[in-house]
Amino acid sequence: AAAAAVLASMRAAPLTAAGLLVMGQEQREQALGERVYAVLQHLDSRHAGKMTGMLLEMEDVALLRLLNMPDEAAAAAAAARSARP
Image (cartoon, rainbow, N blue to C red; front, top):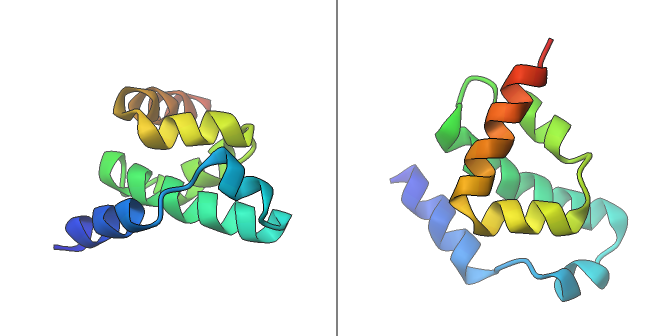
């Protein structure tokens, strides 16, 4: 049920590059962070917070691609897990 709610909220307000441009940096990081965390939570709930922080260092365009392509998200999660101390 919670996963369905997350997916519904992501569909209701999709992030776009144009949308990110009009946001301030803090608002942009918050919006991206929430969505990246929601995706990672399904891939690795134990380390989702730490991996989100690591992935937020990526460029916004790369994060948007990650959010829209499940294979990219899985690959980014695997890379973050292997880079974790």
